[in-house]
Length: 359
Image 1 (cartoon, rainbow, N blue to C red):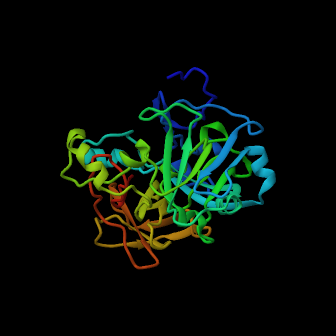
Image 2 (cartoon, rainbow, N blue to C red):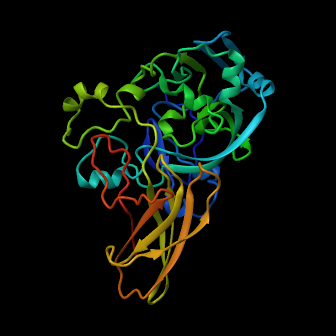
Image 3 (cartoon, helix red, strand yellow):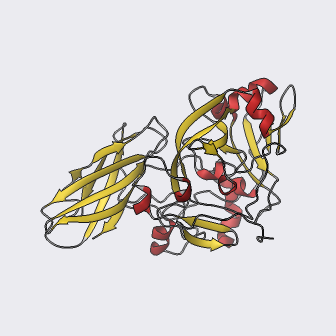
């Protein structure tokens, strides 16, 4: 693959790989902003990053529709009303490095910065599909990007249930803006899918084709990647016959991360972090402990916007006698509390053990 023509990337990211370019910011920087600035939004790629012009970039809707649509991104923007949604984009491999410390895993050794909370602007996917006229009996919506090369398939593809995209409550959009600016190439510009509440692998960048289908996308990244296999599956060879037997991931679990721990006196520390909801309900609280769970201190939620954003929190803990480890755990509106230990899996995805920090 040719990586020679990529646009400049942010210099504020920690590079995890150059070909393809994969990089993340430190969590300590992330938790300083409600909306993640462009330069701190992580980059996850499976091939070269390419720049395209929205005036000519082609986009189509086909498959189980009354009328196939073919237009440019510029035409898409002028044909449908603009909407905005604040939603957190999170890679399934966030915190993979921590899981890999338990036992080796396969994938980029991400720390805890593969997440971004942004305001996305675009058109409702539901509006586009209604314009095309979805036929009865179809259940899946397949997203494809043929615009760039890919490591493991001829194109990048993913899918979500059709009912998710058609829901009036789920805010699935075709995004051409991020934080009130045109979507850049690093983040899928000129057009990407935004599926609030789903892992980033389904938010297809540089999307150019949507197919209304009876089946999930046949693409590698839907069928043979981003799946949670049982802990006893420890090698790629052992995994081969099992990929088709396990469902493709959608949502990620309830989680919290400690972004920074700052001493404020000889006996006190100030802790800041973020939390993410699971599939059932939003985050309603975060607690931290400096004595391995014997005593918990309630944190203050400082930011949360709507049902799709992350939750930022902070807390000062006094009575600290010596340096050590601080843990965090989140709870949601159903009363579910973040697990102490994450479950190991071969791909190192969905790690959600208590957040951990040191001072």
